Length: 106
Image 1 (cartoon, one colour):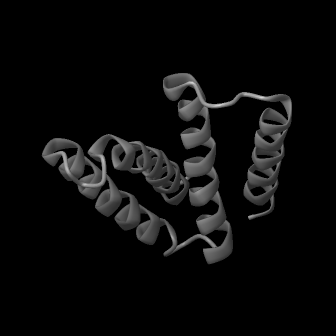
Image 2: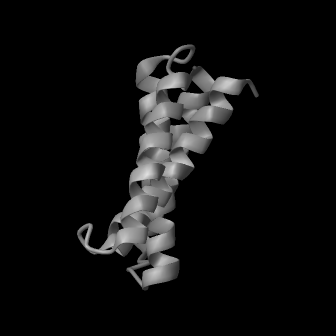
């Protein structure tokens, strides 16, 4: 796995962090979660930009968004008791299949 893919995965994980940070910041009214969110956003965008230097833009962006969406939905289920219905979980499996397909064809 080359460095661009590692940066892309970390960028996606940071996207999950800032999405959860947005919730914790309560509309940017709580200082520490707000700072965490903004730093996570900056680092995520920076790593995405670096990964895009050598990865196709469509693939990189889709993988970044996919990791963020998948991680945020899963943590929403685990941490906030959001719905884990059958169709929602099957949709996540479709997302994972699409991400794997993009990775394998990049």
